[in-house]
Length: 431
Ligand SMILES: Cc1ncc(COP(=O)(O)O)c(C=O)c1O
Image (tube, rainbow, N blue to C red; front, side, top):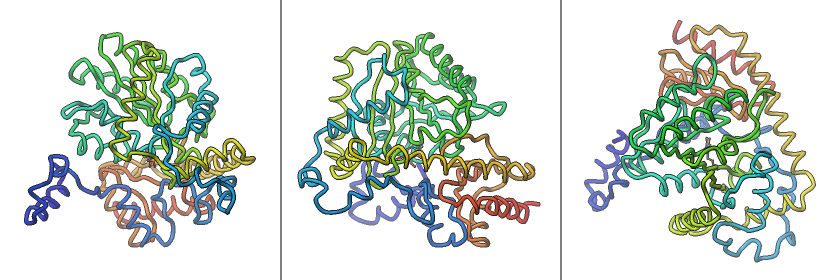
């Protein structure tokens, strides 16, 4: 059990609540992970705050102007704001999201997939999948650099084991390691979660790497194992190099093999810059699925939503739908944000490439909001607190061996200084 959970239990055991805690309740704690470190940085990071996974410009979230302009009277009927949304989400929004998913992943046009079911954000999607498809003691296979909330959801909430493999091998995605981990995962049903563009590394496989990755999963399926693959596409579309695989892994697995169960978790959160709206989606596919299978999966998912949040946000769905149907700037606003992120990516790449690799070694990165460093045996937490206290710079420590920079929330002209100060601080601590 996590030490933080143990400490909370010790406090609560001297109260009436302690004896009521369930097994999950006893395992629960608030991690000192990304959210807690970001909160600390909000207070202290007066120079640069590179903790937050949110695209900002001049301190404000970037956004769709078509949505911003809706905040006035008369735009919506009361029923579009105050009603409950239908179970599974606004039907028109679901249709638009599916259409967009196929536009971005053309090979899905010839595949049978479920409807895109609305959830209360991608975290909710992942948590729903953990509830529906993971039992206590089941194992999740993950690359060793992953979003910290997976730990809380799969280990602490669901009581699952996590088997990791090294993310990188020879400067690219470690497909061999992934395949070995899947084959070593016990039982004939194995579960894999992949997130591209990745948080924290900012890496997406290239087209040829993606083909190899799909081949490896198919080979595991051919060996007789049934493979569930949860694709976390939170940062989909933020691709900054030409050789990156453009279609989601989900699209490639949707018709790949009867033993592969592909699940796409995506969200308007980052794709449409509505972080606070809480609108996510889940979509299912498998080569062997019939319409009846997909309808049954949709009903199971609606049940899992019903008994958690009951119903998802109505105003946000109305606004997003209106932006997609009546808006005039949606694609150009998204393109502008993506272009700005690409420029920041180039800038930070250039700044990092001028630095030595003796103390901090950047992991490969080509996409998304982030890049991260291997602190090569030194404590990433020591560097994080030193940067915060001495230089007013907020960064994220991951498992004390990785330091993540969110360049999405730092202005382009500040990135070189951010990187220079980071390396200077590492030198002051460790040289
Ligand atoms: C990899 C990854 N998946 C999922 C999420 C959750 O997204 P949402 O805000 O839609 O719950 C995040 C958010 O930081 C993320 O980094």
